[in-house]
Image 1 (cartoon, rainbow, N blue to C red):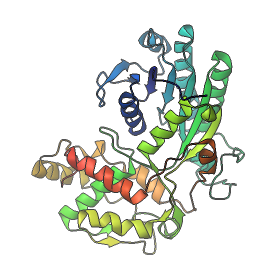
Image 2 (cartoon, rainbow, N blue to C red):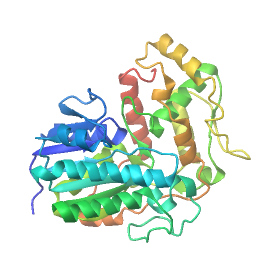
Image 3 (cartoon, rainbow, N blue to C red):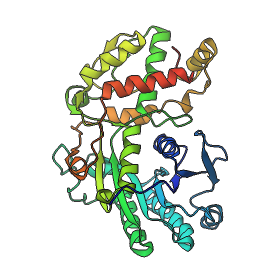
Image 4 (spheres, rainbow, N blue to C red):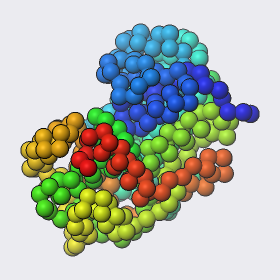
Length: 359
């Protein structure tokens, strides 16, 4: 079966780091692309905005009327105070979307982005009951604990059976990418942190655990994630399967950290005795970043729209090895890969060109 020709696609979560990247790829490939978010304007040219709240079923149905997408890329999620609430809210978003699209019966494939909490457990039981050996494989059994990723998968399977579309699930690791107005991006968070260190003369101190500093890990380039999701949605080998998605190389942070430091001309300092989380060291960051933005004429002076200290702390603070196996994806025909050090450098260059990070 040949790859599906360009038609109409809907990206749910079009303002997120993954959603923005998928939108750019689809537009460049000739797809008529709708981007669903709560915003009336989208950061990617050529995407038609669909403005709606995923939890308002009636408004969502009206907003999606007439879109008739062939493909749906679902990258949106809403963090809640408990995993029970995460499950309730993040399954409702999928269910409401499927219900809104059902009358037109146009959807051929839905690609759902999740992540490695599939193997590591949810926020409130993170790392507490990991049973899989690294590198993680897609065939691992689910953990015996409530997890909104599992609930989302089940909602996806139910929707596929009811509406007759194929599906794919994409389990990404920590994401390096380019996105405006979305802070859950380690590449941008580390770039902001390194810039603050450069301007204040402070050393670039690794914030995470000894395990992360010395152990093997991997990350996911946002463009690679978009490539895999579009590949799965348009090729029969991608149908009805979950796939890990990571760059394909592995590294140790003790190797990558000084290479990141070199881009900013700061002194790299590794793990020493205990983690030094960013969230506890960034009280002065808002004022400092406003001064930096004014000094270098940057487009964003609000550091909270750029950096997510808690999110990066969570990834770098894990006291366990964390990396994924890409064999299944490769055997199915997706052969994309990225160099992690080059991914960081390329995304930093884009942030500098966009005047988000100073040169």
